[in-house]
Image 1 (cartoon, rainbow, N blue to C red):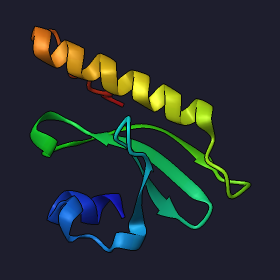
Image 2: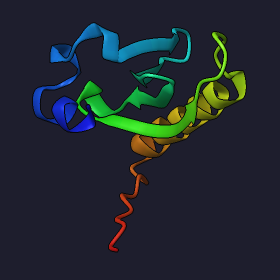
Image 3: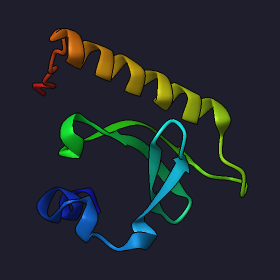
Length: 92
């Protein structure tokens, strides 16, 4: 799913793969069965920044996870505007 999204972009993937979990905070989720991977759209909506994931056990969204993703989004854009955003590479 993520590989396909990287190849074709968010606009070209099936609508069933994503859901806007919080419209006000602009937090989305990738959906695969019970698995949810939360994300937001980054700089010029060209990149996707994944924040966390969970196995969904009920129909209700986990507010704490969405609030965490919203905090990461805020920190991301603050760093982007201050030109202090750093890319960390995992070299394993």
